[in-house]
Image (cartoon, rainbow, N blue to C red):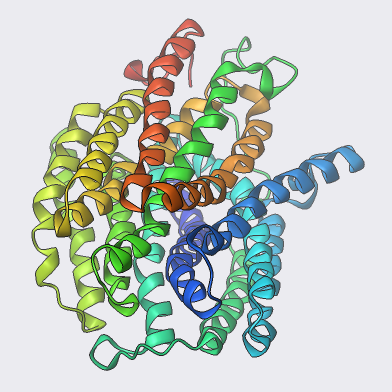
Length: 477
């Protein structure tokens, strides 16, 4: 690829990642809405998790609608509309969802709030179906997972500031925080978000993003020739992996406020920086895992592996300083980041190996969180964000590898499984009513155990198909 072509690809990639930012901003903001709604509407812990359930089940409903319409019109709907139009449509649908927050807040209606979140996520479902394979297509296929990781880093910039912005809108600044919860205070930030959705839809429509990119670069004609994507074991097992991965990622954060409030005595308005730290940990890990997308120079990559995570950590500290939060409790977290860097280096860029290593460390982190007390347990639980950080691109890349012409269909099936974020969160909330919040994290341990199994199993499946990531994907992939 020439320098001019590379610059064109980056020019196309930059507007695309804007939608990744929105996904993160809204998803992480839900973790602030959960304890707020719980108190305002007098909900149980499992009932409060309906926020996550409504939001993430919409991804499955959206994917089903997408496939149903494609069957009815006898043509893939994204191929018919074009990628830019599909992204813009998804943003408009999400904007409609934000409008419901206004009457919901005025009426004090929890079901209407859930309906607004559901419609926002319905738009996200279409956006994700388009944006993930598009990010892979904007450059060489062998570095596609790194581009997804980089886009995920932008996503987690949104997750880092989302809880802080929504917390500020509800409680005010940390210095002047009050304990009075007003549901009406969520109206303005979500209306502003709706305007932003519309603005970005127009921006994307005018951008240089390709309308119908070549999503599959396959030289081996034997790959991707099966009639349905569901005939590929790497995809079917990968669908379960996406389900439990999104589940453990979301449930770890969404149940953390209840643990900190009930077991550690934190006030609700003081929890936001720790939710921000969890999602910032995702950003830290993804910036670390994305260094190969910037340069092929091995020496430069080694240097960036140390610079990128601490730069991301610095952004977390900066936004919390602006929000006037006490930074002293967070400096020790810099040592935990070293574990991430060493794990990333040990993976050597192989997505299956990275999935295995990070899943095992995730299990260890949750066990420490379950069987220690105080801030040690909080840091252990928040560090799960570090080790979830690059699992989405790892699973996504492994699951669609070798699908060839069935790649886009496989992508829609994977997006469908994002519902795990809501179901696993609700399940952990339900389990917590019997075990307590801290021990309910056994649900997350089981999720990571499956991911470790998938990493081992899929590696053998792909090698039997001639795909080896240690050889930069054999067969031209």
